[in-house]
Length: 128
Image (cartoon, rainbow, N blue to C red; front, side, top):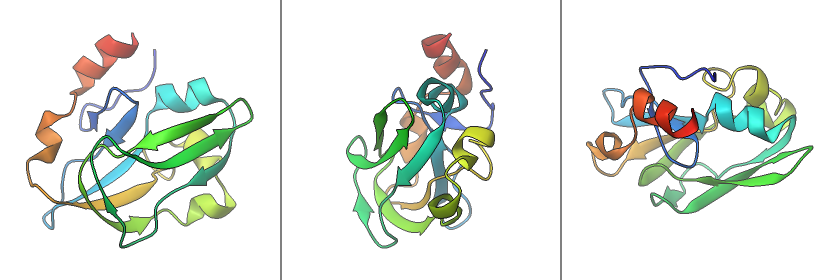
C-alpha cells in the first residue's frame, strides 16, 4: 500500500496539499501512489512564482520514463515558491514525494479551500 500521510489533504488527481501555515500558504506535491505509477521522473514543469492558479486547472506536468502527466491545481491562489531543486534533481519526486520532492507553494485565495479536499482515509479508499 502507498504511503499516505494523515496530516495532508489529497485530490482525486493524486496531488497532496499541506495544511495552511499562519500566512495561508500550502505546499503541493504529487502522492507516493502517483510517483510510483509514473516511474522514474525525469522532468517537472511548474508554474513560476507570481502565477495565479485556479483549482482543477492544469498548472504543470511531470514527465517520467513512461509518460507525461498533467499536474492539476488542488487549490486557487498565487504561487509563492517553486521547488528549484527539481530543476536539477527531479528524482526527488520519486525518492521523497512528501518531503524534498514537493512542487510548489501556494498562497490560498480562500482560507478554507483545503477543507474540500480528500482526507487521507478517503484518498486511501480511492487508490486502495
